[in-house]
Amino acid sequence: MAASHHPNYKKIYLTLVILLAISVAGPFIGIKWVTIITAFGIAFVKANMVIQNFMHLKWERRIAKYVLAASGALLLLFYYGVAPDVQAHRGQHWVNDDALAATARGIPAPHGSEGGEAAHDEPSGGGSDGSPAAPAAAAAAAAESTAAPNAFNARAAFAANCSPCHGTGGRGDGVVAAALNPRPANFADPAFWRSRTDAVLIRTIQGGGAAVGKSASMPAWSSLLSEAQAADMVAYLKTLSH
Image 1 (tube, helix red, strand yellow):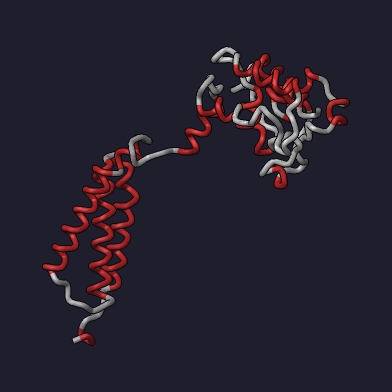
Image 2: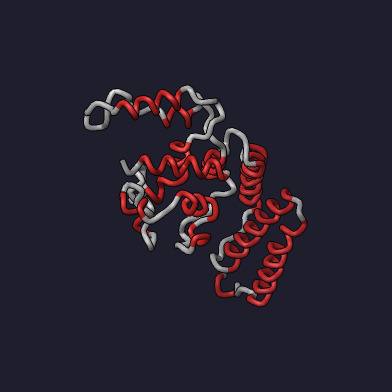
């Protein structure tokens, strides 16, 4: 029986070409349910071709009905349960962590928010080694706690935007610093401040490294920081060298 059954390769090739054309043209229709049904239909036809022509098995209509019914149920479950949330980028099944992080970096943290609390979670009684905190640091923390709700927080902005390259302490040892050439600036080095003015640093923050003839690895932050906020950032960076 098997010897009498020879695959019609020309027919198979023509069928595959037609299915390819359908799979390419389907998305251009712009109807999502048509595209999804077309994809499942093409997979079903290809499975039928493999079973009949290469596995030499009898095609059972009853099994085909079960497969179609199960596929249809899964398709409906996916389309009505998951796809709407993914397509709309919302819902309990969708959390776009990258978009949320990008949004958080572009919005100054309000007083009392999670971002604001993170900036003040360090104990005011001393440093990480148990030494007493300097009076100036305590005064700065008190000033920050009484700042206006929408005041720009240079420390929080540095932690969110700059620390991946420059490090939490501004020493140029952030998590991605090793992959950069040249290495990020070390704000804790007094020699760095002897060769730069506030105006140059403000222009660097807003326009990026290329704006002052330096490495283009330093991005421009003018879309997030105004000139006044960039000046506040420079003032904060100076504290890292003490």
